[in-house]
Amino acid sequence: MTLGTRANTIGELRASGYEVLTVREEIRNNLIAKIRSEELVFPGIIGFNETVIPQLENAILAGQDIILLGERGQAKSRLIRSMVALLDESVPIIAGCEINDNPYDPICRGCRDMVDEQGDDTPVEWVSRDERYSEKLATPDISIADLIGEIDPIKVAEGRHLSDELVIHYGLVPRTNRGIFCINELPDLAERIQVGLFNLMEERDVQIKGYRIRLPLDVYVVSTANPEDYTNRGRIVTPLKDRYGSQIHTHYPKDPADEIAIMEQERTRFPDEDKLIIPGYMKEILAEITSQARQSNEINQRSGVSVRVSISNFETLLGNAMRRAILHGDQWICPRSSDLPYIVASFTGKIELETFEEGRESRVTDDLTRRAALRVFGNYFDVSELEDIILAFDLGETAEVGSDKQASTYPALLERIDGLAGAVRRLTDDNRDEAIASAVEFVLEGLHLNRRLNCDRTPAGSTYSR
Ligand SMILES: [Zn+2]
Image (tube, rainbow, N blue to C red; front, side, top):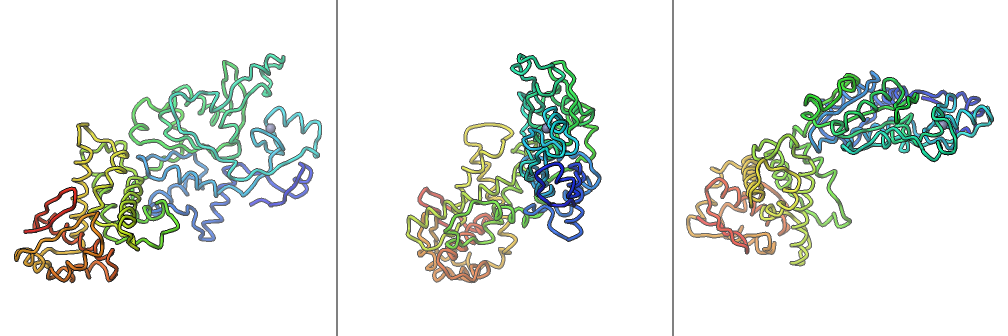
């Protein structure tokens, strides 16, 4: 760790004893300090504690370049962004420098001239850690100019010599000098740009329009890629591939509890949060839908099923429950099984089906929802324990439910149908009508999915019977 004085000139900085570290040393030192003090190094990252995070920490401690391989929605960018917290809060640069020049060893011509003229009086400014991070999504049209820089024709026309760095208009990587540069979906970068990037990282020089320009930058380049694109022959130039010291595979949450924790952490919240009643089984069904989708052969697994699917489905489910509450003037907002079909709007845009045909998207959504609900129901009930409910239906009972039905109509079902109250009590001890309505629907739908009750679905709702 270096001294945090706020020197204003190179002379003051030197007098304070400030030592300039490379970005790798700086991140490594701060990581060591955090591990020692048992501080959470990657806050908000769920489910990677025993897999991804130790590998990432090892790579940082080893000073290696890192590529994270994973399908979409596996928190890759978020992991890299949280590396920013491992940078010092602020570091000194030569004031006004476009490439964050080290005050003791500037590389751009402008700064070198300034230091020659002003010596220890050269002004210094402090840049925050957030200003030392940039990221770019790789696309085939990214140019050397975007990433590294280009020769400024106006400056050339002014008569400057081409070997003079003052004619360079710097791209994103030099502007992130002494910081972290993240390139997402690396294989989508054109081959010659990959070569340019490699030369910059390894040889510390670049070719711009045929001119070889020395640029001894200090940048921690971290990349992400889809594993299949990355291993696909020819998508990554070999020297660049060799350059990565650590190749770390990310993954989807292995435990449904992690998926749910991410859903809770990431969903959009509003000030009327205290009106929500969210039963655990409803969240479990959503997590299970995503988990089933990740195993489905009807869905393209190469691109994956992001945790954003779970998050958006959760938001949609709560949205429908909210809409019902407003329409009925209900006090509480509680999602139910009959709200689940509405997730089609958030689900289908985030998955890629293997084959396209009219209506297939909602059929796939429907299938996955049923399978998920059946599975979660099985975690709560053994159908043989619910025989008295089935008997009540045998004796002629029917039950009408639906996402538009008012919650206050549900408690009457508990009186009418033997055994239903007991089953509901196993799900919740909440006596509010909205919580009871949700539990009743889960029990009835579970019995239907176990083929113990018939269900007649109409736009107005579902009628369960025998
Ligand atoms: Zn400079």
